[in-house]
Length: 338
Ligand SMILES: [Zn+2]
Image (cartoon, rainbow, N blue to C red; front, side):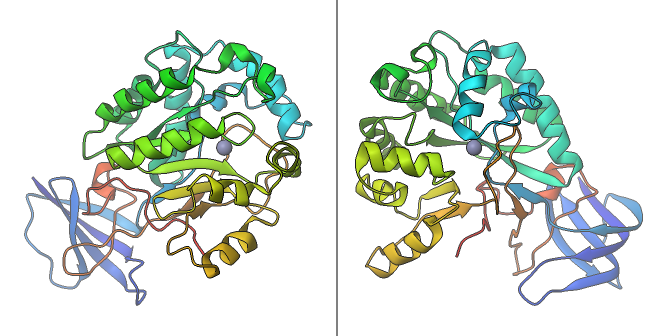
């Protein structure tokens, strides 16, 4: 089934900035096949967009969908205070709550033009099941491509971590559940990533073994890095180094990794590490400021999905599936990097 969207200002976002005023866009089997202006190709149906601007879909690179449920809480706290206020509330997460939060969060993102969402889900209280499945179900219902992470926390308060012991997992259980979650990927609209939470909630062992697992399964890696001054202080006190040096020690400075935030001194440090001989370097989903945490932090950036023939394009006014270009990988592409 092919559909030709006409009467649109098509902004392809290709390398030379091609735009088609009064243009058209051909979608076939859910993928953008070509864009242009002037002579229109044949199609099974034609849809008039009424002078709409058509752009590639946006790609979200860092979110915590379940935090939509607690957005208004503890807003005057710093990161650690905010987390400590909310951990006990989040401990009650279940499949129904996860689904409701994901529906609301994904709908908000879709309405803003976002067609691929990365959800950093690291909250898996022991004994709770169906959380990732619930958010994937919500994404499928809304037609949004999702990169869902099986994150983890295993460093509880009694071992010097920030989260209460009641919501951290046993390391082996977390790794086994992560390997099982890899089966949820469908090669199209659902991708799975491995994403232990942060230096103050995950042990070194779980960081290393998560990386080993992800590389064995061919999955991407994600974590928080250098989010606040409190995290820097924690890393100095516990590991005797900066968060970036800590990641380097763990073998996480690599091209299959992208990190959230990297504020303060992290970017210069990562650049310096690259100059010192790291052949590859992680990408960064970055907010300019990250002092004041809120549920629903966004790292939304421009999507560039090459089409056959070298064009790039997607229709914001079409369905989310139709807006995803042609590569079909579902990978968060064109993230901010330096
Ligand atoms: Zn985050």
